[in-house]
Image 1 (cartoon, rainbow, N blue to C red):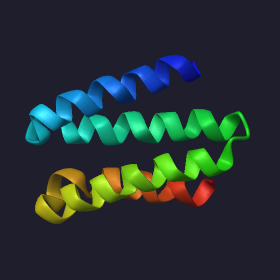
Image 2 (cartoon, rainbow, N blue to C red; image 1 turned 135 degrees about the vertical axis):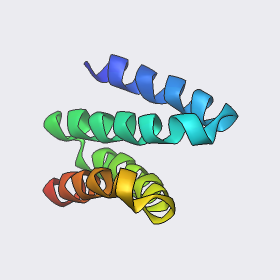
Image 3 (cartoon, rainbow, N blue to C red; image 1 turned 30 degrees about the vertical axis):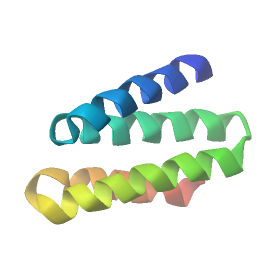
Image 4 (spheres, one colour; image 1 turned 90 degrees about the vertical axis):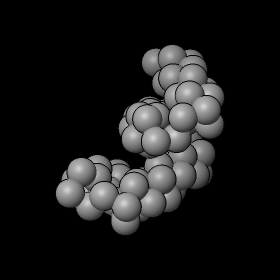
Amino acid sequence: ALARAEEAVGIYRSLAKARPDAFLPDLAMALNNFAATLSDLGRLEEALTRAEEALRIRRQLAEARPDAFLPDLAASLNNSANM
């Protein structure tokens, strides 16, 4: 699961670099999932780093479009708190 989660982050990172408007939300989701997987494996410092990156992206998205992204920001805050 870890390798696939990491691969997904890499793919979404590339896509978001080319088209941030379309793929930043997906990158944040993949980072959130990767963080949860790392946390489950006891790799807490790495998990927190990824969760904080997802949180930064989701804050940015929620500031621009709170109607669409505020729930995702809440999910990332919850995920980060659990780490």
